[in-house]
Length: 395
Image (cartoon, rainbow, N blue to C red; front, top):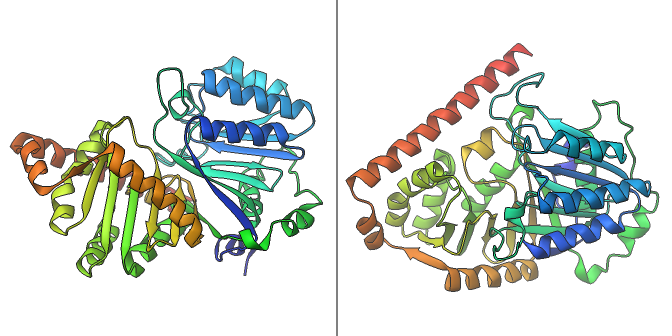
């Protein structure tokens, strides 16, 4: 078996995990890990903005580089164009290795739509954060403005080692020196108490590299659930196969709850998402819309013991275009902690969508707008697939 397959084909057990909510909790944890790093830092993100939050994280990474921590930073070449050239120069002058992933107009390949959507942070190959948070103010709690709803997993242990290897792989084609894992890794792993061991599987999606592991995780989840499925997703537009499996689970008696965005930052996606409501409701799938602000989380829980969480949205953009990372976790205690938070959010912050309330708000023209939005997005995604297939044949 190749080393690449070994990275993602099994669960590791010597891991300690913690659920981190977005906003102040996430950025406090992120700063703590940056400030305590001694060996290396990897940050890979979709959006990095040099606003107050970005400047805070950038300053911490520059301080780490100045104390001889090797800092590797990759931002998506489209979504992070908002960073100023002066800010990037400041990072590089401090000793940070920086690059854009596929700059939008300077890419060697120009895979239209293929973006670095994953949000991963790894410190010293021992500590990692995987979730949905980008580095910008709207994911942080700012004065008078709470963060968008999002979650991450903080993991210590073997899964962090795997994430370190994945992040390092994205630098191998560059001229920057590649740092190895610290020498004390085994002794660090041995210090994790067996009573806190947690089974974790690192999952990736990158259609160009023939990786559809997260899609398969959801496929397994929908196929094998016995009692319950809870999904929280910011842009929920499952492809035909996943939608079919979800409906089959509902028909065999699995109780399914889906928590989606009420207010949305991408209204065409929200209109398209609502086009599916009638179909879901007919299969007795419960739908809730989160109301306080934008929901950006991407997670699922099945039968109270299995969790997947990360950057992957249940839609074909994540499945067929973006580069994504999730963590699958098999642990009843951890899953229960997440369930408690999700149930509290449903009770306190969500509006339930029923067949009756949907009919009251979805008149003819509203339904027409939803249908147009849904099929427009499908056409755009099919263009991505066509372009990718042509590029692969030409390579």
